[in-house]
Image 1 (cartoon, protein in one colour):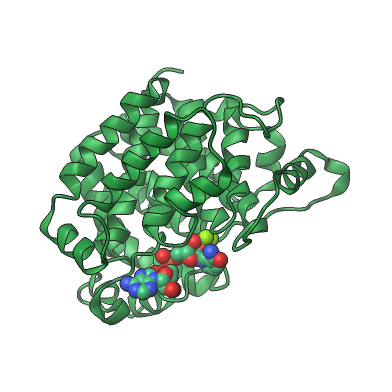
Image 2 (cartoon, helix red, strand yellow; image 1 turned 90 degrees about the horizontal axis):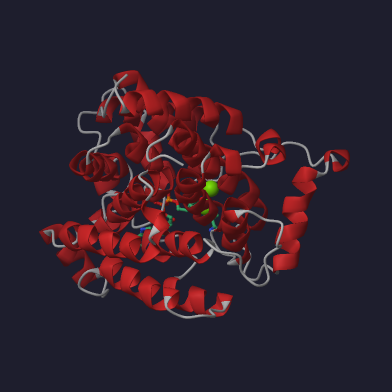
Length: 345
Ligand code: 8NA
Ligand code: MG
Ligand code: MG
């Protein structure tokens, strides 16, 4: 498709919702046989089975807040976004939020709050959260701003409302950058795509706070860059097992152990792979593969779904999946509205 086409915007937001909704089935599972994944996904096609509607979780609940805030304010407004997070949480508290972030969301609901970034800074004895909750909702920043500097700045600030550790918010920056490049058609050249991400993250992680957090947490000097290099190594290999992907990149709730994993899922599934149904297109392969990794499946599939959706576009999404997933049709509409905001038409 054409770079930054309407189809790609719709695909990105819908892909994210689908990943979240279908991934919920396996969240926290240690081993997920591909057979179970395919069975779960096939049940969406089978109307007679009456799978019912798969509900979305915190990933989509917060992404919807980001979308509505960016659209409503025609840009980034931290107080408006914080208010929407808090309101959404109090309206539906049982969407599977991380155990720590709930405290932030409760504090953000206070009408007296002065600094909306403070509650996040108080998390984990002042170190801030490095969970993937900032990254899971980062895609809309790439859909609202065409400019790379804006994307990096606002994806970081949007994540910092709940995740003040650099390993948390830089995961959001990386996820937004991946969606941005995908939207522009960069996945047509996978090697250049990953090299471009490394170049961008070299700068992002050169920041003093990032270097300090990495040192304290005993990670590599530039943790995301190191993971992106691992992805490049894995891409060069003709065969990679699920176990190796988990060992090299992780499948957990830390942003560092899930954002690079989601990016790898997309890259790995650009072509047909052994073990995945031949009838599947690229987007279906990406979602299926993400679920088969186990761990934080809803969030990894949500992030991979956004990147893949921006690449393949809305036409690649099976209509039965949209029908089965709560919020998918809304996401489709929002994708169109963000497309208009992006092009400022
Ligand atoms: P969060 O900010 O509460 O972080 C998630 C968890 O990561 C925390 O509860 C801690 O256990 C740990 N953590 C984060 N930062 C630190 C730190 N500095 N020091 C020590 N421990 C830390 O929530 P979030 O918004 O980042 O959510 C992350 C994930 O949790 C999401 O995928 C969401 O869906 C949720 N979740 C995951 C599972 C699962 O089984 N994988 C289950 C329920 C909820
Ligand atoms: Mg979730
Ligand atoms: Mg999750």
